[in-house]
Image (cartoon, each protein chain N blue to C red):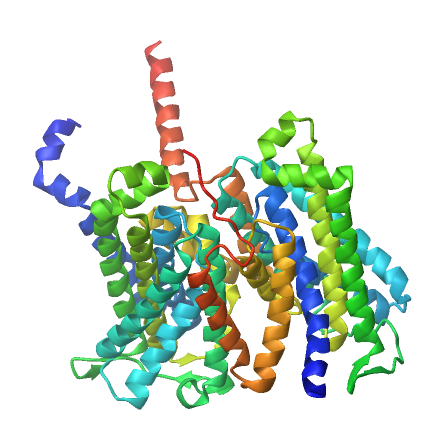
Length: 345
Length: 292
């Protein structure tokens, strides 16, 4: 095929447009409820995949922070929990609409995130990890003891969202999750392709050089951290409206580490990689490992799997599993061209 | 006054446990340049071994302790030899992620190896009484813990400051490439640091365990407070975190007793964050100036 001709072709251009591709990807994910209806999946699978989508949202935020700015946050679970409890409180107790409640939750979490960032980002990256761990612990204790708002250990209930006067079903809520995910993928791509992304790239390359070029380190680090908390809070809002309950035991360091695993396994700075990582970290243990003989019954299996995956990926395949696709394509091309060369010879 | 003294004495015990854990973290951080987030989880693992041998197999405490030390050393050796040493060129963030992955592995393995039932750790002095001291009382076990903690800290600081080995550790901590040029076997020093951290972790675990039951979450508060102790004391010295650990131990107990039993701990963490805003480099921190 003649590429110069193809590039001018509107169909080809449409096909190559990343936003269109994100939408195709979303449409593919929307097929899941129908596959469930014709019996390929069971209803539990819908919740598992929905969960993976929700955690993808939080992981996209963490990828902005970890992949682009090179900072670790161990408080993701705390902020997701904050988003969940705030949304549940705003919709159930104050009677606000879901989207107002979600926006309120995001604003609240971002504000706290900004404060924490302001405190810890002035020194070195390690301080953010410890400060977020600290905040996560404060939030978790608050979820446990602030009975009047969070319901304490008995948990907090919520309902499926009501949008434009109609209350969604479980399938409808799932479709909403997919739409939010696709919108966030577009937003993330635009963010990292713009001046914000360039500034973060420069900082990662060399802090000193970036500063010399007029990049304000604290400002961009704060911005990255605030964005990642906003994503986390949005994930919490989606969680509570999809799962319809929230318990303090969900929002422990365990979840933060799993979301970190998503980013590492999928691939730093890759949007599709984050989603791939989320599916690997949250669905593979549930779907495949549990069915294996002997090791299938091991209680902490998902956890061991994700931990081992993190270490292996960081040590031997630091670009993440998303690179498998381009590696495979490169290998295939090499094989094909090798064969072609042999044929010519 | 006697209540205050009582709280102070009890804080010395918890502070000592945090101090041992904080020392373990700082020693690994300074020699191996790895933020050792899995310290608490690995300590939990070896503490589980001791508790299981004691309560289930009927070994005496000292024998189980020796086996526990062997397990801790083996784990530290394996982690340094097979993982950390091979990731030497990785960035600081990658190494942090590796230790976070280790948390997941050990946390996942613990129920597989030890079962899901919580275990009980016997006290060092089974039927110990109390010492009376100016109206405050302290149990024999708590007193023993304070002494053991102080003894090991003293031993460690003696080795660090007065022996050739300690000099090698300090040189490695201050500048690893130069230390290697000067003939210090930094590989062995790093390995030694990991092993020391493993043993210190086991000690802190065994000291804190009789107060609760041994579960997979046993060391979470210790690890958390030890990390905060490092922040409070600053990462530049070995004694800063120890000081920070005692301050946190005392502050925690005072706040939970005098202010609020439910919100005292949160208050302490908020105070720590405010402190970080005022003195970002810790109590005994120097500003670290990076040369281009």
